[in-house]
Length: 124
Image 1 (tube, helix red, strand yellow):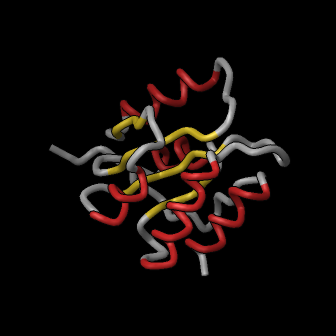
Image 2 (image 1 turned 90 degrees about the vertical axis):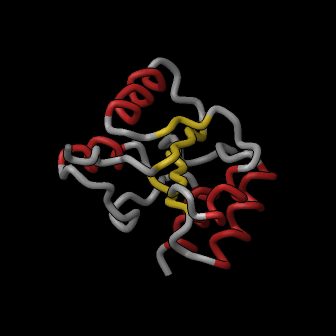
């Protein structure tokens, strides 16, 4: 059996997606991703390396979409290993499914300033 494109990926949604959150979550789940519903322990899961953690960041240019504690944890994890967390915009899900593999975060920079800072750490 072929592996699903997002198998071995844990996805956390950052920001207010409104009604599109459910659709994106089921899309990610159908592609094999595990949906994380709490930001607690995301960075420690990322540094363990058991599955790749993906932060899907809502495309809002301003405002705080990533909880401060999570941002700090992820920043630390990315300093240790720039590939342990992917910080991407929502487009990453559908593009990864279309290409039948989890794509790198390079082409999927989030619009939000704080999220983009984290994205830059993962794309040195």
